[in-house]
Image (cartoon, rainbow, N blue to C red; front, side, top):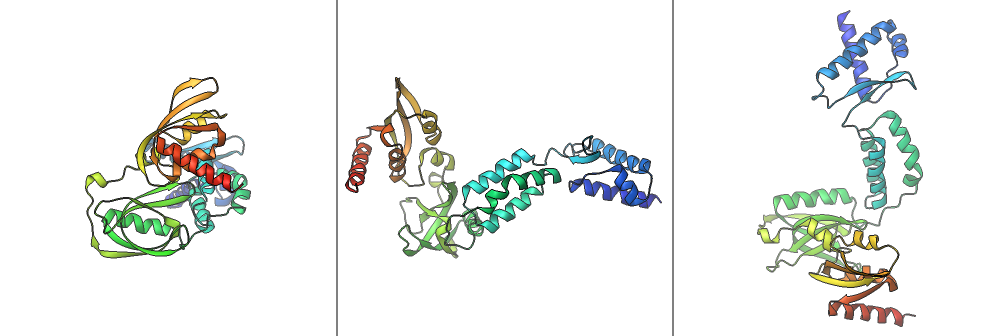
Length: 321
């Protein structure tokens, strides 16, 4: 008899962990026992959770007057609002194929309650249906990333088959250094295997069609370690370049959008609707593309090389019209 009670309690507890609603009346009918017996089982489970609060991460069985049942609550469960934010970011990134996105969403939903799963499904159903991943030259961006992460950790030289921007296929022997995400794509930052000056190269991971791990290993001096945080602050659209300080006028409607996009930016002067902004950035194609995207709201003041490059690009654009 005692064993039956313990088995029943364990099953009720496991059901609550799966996010099921624990109804005293329904369980009493299912197990053919009194409602008092089920109530005692629930009280025992609640006592166990209270006595082992730290081990069970503040888990509780909480009664809901709305549906007249108990539900499992845990600090470690993702709340619906948290899960919704994560899923929206994943869908908005468009970096993974649809099968990978659906698998991730399914696994994430296991960390929340049954009720929240239903809410989430209703909120994202249309967006999942219309999801379009960016075109890729590899079977799985996730699989590629995992191979690259292991090579970075083990300091293994790799040979990759890669499709360049103009769609030429090339093979490169590289020393992988870091992985970053920006603007829909995951990037591998690496050094060419025979480059003694260690000039970083950026490779879009979705364009890596094949990865072969070589037997030889490499060592990286500390000065060649990548600071991903610093790179994210100063780099636009993952185009490499030297760090330079730029200065420009901005007269657009949303100055905050500029400050958000350029984390190192600060307003050094303000004159009516015109703000003078300074920022330290990687000087290259990326920052030119971004400043041009602001149209007549931006006027570059320095350095002279950036002014010249902006003028040249504007002249090329004018010729097309």
